[in-house]
Length: 147
Image 1 (cartoon, helix red, strand yellow):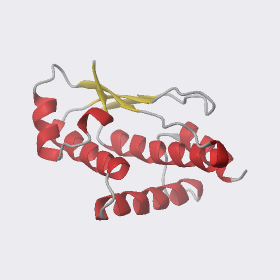
Image 2 (spheres, one colour; image 1 turned 30 degrees about the vertical axis):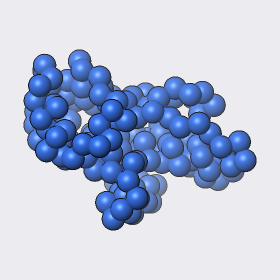
Image 3 (cartoon, helix red, strand yellow; image 1 turned 60 degrees about the horizontal axis):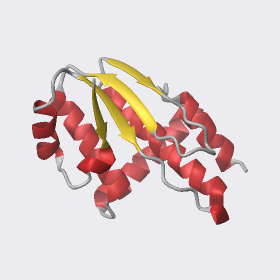
């Protein structure tokens, strides 16, 4: 299983990500989304936002995976989000990763689209319109949203 930290690909577009994936052995990957330091002045929102974004990123990975697993790190620890996936199609994974990376690391229209779709996913998950693959992350996001 190849480990991919999205921070290492932050300047890659979908084409470059696909080239990177094509030089990896196998079709199993562990995708790492690092946690950021929590802002002590606004820790509830910081934790909510990180779990909210990670849950949507996980859903995007799940949508492109043949098999899928994820961890739910403790909110008070600096443990990264980790998603283990097996894919059949590296091309669709490259597009999902490019969208996730843009959602995390850019300030443009793609980042806005990522946030809009994450918001819809969050709402749809709690109203039963979407069957979330990352309930553990959504649950924690919701707990810190309500504080």
